[in-house]
Image 1: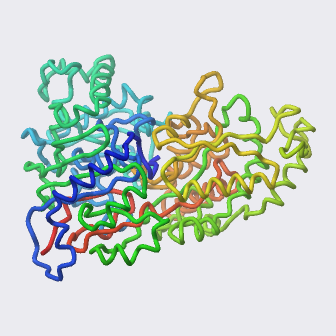
Image 2 (image 1 turned 180 degrees about the vertical axis):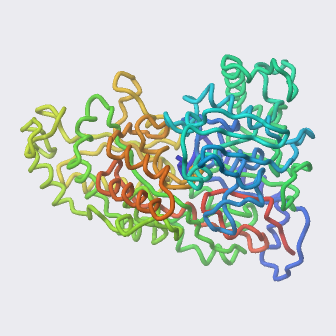
Image 3 (image 1 turned 45 degrees about the horizontal axis):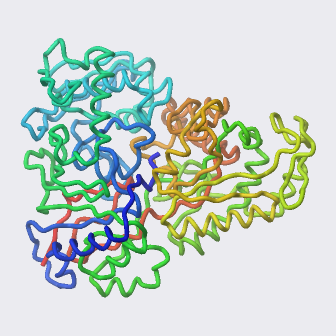
Length: 615
């Protein structure tokens, strides 16, 4: 999930004021933002504004669902630790081999064998990023797969029969059957992250094994589990991120030198970085904020932020911000947005399993109006899991069309025609049973359309949307009880669960940003809606969907798009979630003397190694 909004650490008003004061005294580069000169400057410090209450919270690349987010993945980890393959070429949604750690994979044996040749980049400790580092990643992943956010039973790494280093820079995988090379590259190989052997230990004082050490901890399942336990524990100690020697071994363009538990992160160039371009900036800083209004107050001062954002509610101030030396650049990513429903909730799960109920809920979401009113035009309706923006070859006409247009009146009719009656102000099941005019299997007599929905705090547009949803629901006799929490609170609240778990009490959730396709860049659905998928928050389970998803993984040529169309059309109509508009991930404001930021990545990467100032 990659959810577009990310994890939480509390930031007090005093902290925000301190950030503003520190930023204004340190950003010498921003002060010349109105200059018309284009002389390139080597050095300078760029300040990047984090989304409200969404600082980085996890540094180890093998993340669980509770820690996985776009901020942790693409605005923090990838600066230091690179995936095997890098995605995004000049703003286009495609693989970028020139900035990847390996050449294009070679498929053979009827697409059952994959050979990867690494380029021999270096870790900051001087070691080579080699095939043994990929073996290390796979060993940890295999032994701890259920801890990984992207794990789906039967898929990666279960579909890898064997893997080995056949040479210092050559890594070979044998697959359990033939797969589409495009799908396997975009959705499976994209998940590989070489790990330095300096991490292959079970304690801080344990020795680092050599590449040929037959007793390296990761070579046994028990050892790999112990290594993961050690690294995960280190990754939960935010206060030591900049001081723990583990995290100083990097292969990305940046190295962390300072990190606060509030989320202020300071990076300097990794002088051993093998890729290109090399960083021009001398320092890169990420700044946390408690709300979008707090960020705007600093942004509008024109001195403290090099790359920030304009809150939707402050769009009337766009000209004022421009006068402070900023350029406006809305940022769209390859994503869709939704509200998950907990099908395993012991109280209301059976209600959510009724398609007519989900149809009624979808008819309470006025997507075009929400985009126009609450997002001020900077958003796109979501009608299926396949995004329609940025322009791409994957979506079809069904994904571009509302299958259940806004109509509280029709939503009410759907309920009354299926055994519900308005008792007071709330619909109540009065005709239980499985017939077409009854409430549906598992729904009990007397159950009420009374649901709890927790949504992200700190974002005015989301609050407005959820208030509108609540109001429309009331017209249909559905009571929506709203509550707020920071992003991490919503994500931890809405994790997949079984009915017997105490944590399965959640019913509906909205973390504000939905899902973006990375590191699964092909929108085929196995990570999100396949039964048992770690990111299948609501535990949606449809045998038809499972079959359609499976077909997207092996089809090739013209059949590939046919398979994807069948999947997206079913999901548009079967409503595994309640679709809502996908906002532009941010309305970027970029200092006019900061270059190399645009075009912005369709996958929400930030690449400050591309940035430079002019004077």
